[in-house]
Image (cartoon, rainbow over all chains, first blue to last red; front, side, top):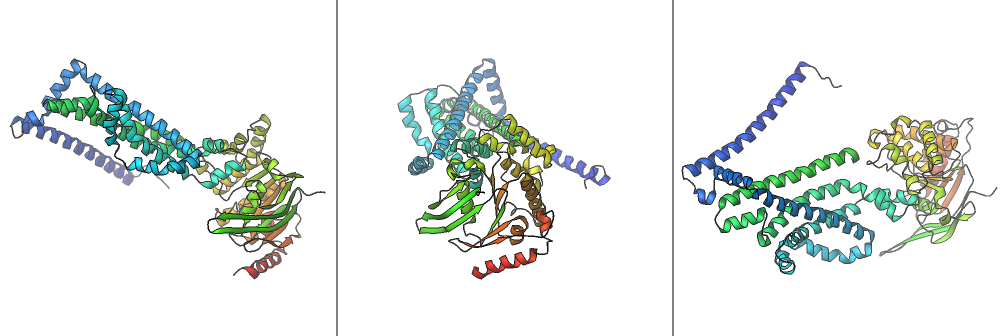
Length: 267
Length: 256
């Protein structure tokens, strides 16, 4: 039996809260310490602020770029590229997985090619794509797509194949068709799997977009990083890195939120 | 009266790279409307294969299955099939699970929905419609699975060890529940099991299958001196032990 109000229980909860508070405080402390050390070291010229930048210089750069609006432009472009390649990758990946599940013959034929494509470091394709498609957003999106789509196909297909055979048989006992098996069992049984593939995908799309931007862009955070490093504006590079980290975390948390919503209804 | 289900000299073999495996050999059986048949036999002897053939999921290598005078593949929908596990989908509510069969068969008519309401009400699931399957007890899950099958108004029900995943206590009461429900709804049923007491307690006839390739070794007609026979009451009938022993001996004679 669970009692909610005994003295020991109250003490336990108090202790638990204290622990959590402690952890949050220490986490903040690590961050503050890191920033303070960085700032201090560059102030007392232990490190060269020209190469390593410093928190205050980053902040100053950021406020300048916020005022002239350019930071929103670059972040917006990168975010746009990530979202488009992520959506395309997830959608096309799942679609192709469905087609391969549907047609076992085609799946068997393509299997070795998928395995090779999966092991190939997709970034090696980036230069070719840029030659074919030019220095533009389109080629950046396609580069990011090649990074994420093969993994999506393989993960999703794997999930489709691991659906309980008897659940499929059940649909056939009702006189159902293959389409019914797909719609009533295979896809719903794979919601969680597809979401976890999306989690991997958002990270891969980010990698793909940044590689694309490093190689081919005229705008975006990746462009700021490569341009900044070429003209030794390390403040730009560091600021872009920090924004990128925030962006990646935000997107990942978005998927986690989606996962929670879906699992509440389905699992 | 002509039988509802007529299995005529059915053979079945399946093929793999290692060769051909004969699973069923010359199975002939006639079942009348309202009868309850249990099939027992050693594990892996082809009991499930036989059910799959009766349901039309598999085609026999030789022979034919006739239901209501028509060949099985024309009338596949008049056979309901209950699998070993209840296979209620966790992403659907109990109610929407029960509707699955109607959805797939595209028979979600007013009349059928009303019939489901009646079944849910009669068999104590009315208040659990919007629950998730994981919130139900094992026995309730099995009843929900039965309603899902009954919703399509099958003439014949195939039960493939539907109680094997339950613990002993639940198993007895669920078998009792389902036996009563089937009798009340006037359904013809074929139960596959390797549990002899369960087979005897539910059936009018017990069919004993031999080792693979399975043939019908013997048919026992169960005649118990009970007035109101239910699966649970059957177990305390005076003849119960004799049937058990006879079937046990029959199975032990070729089991090694």
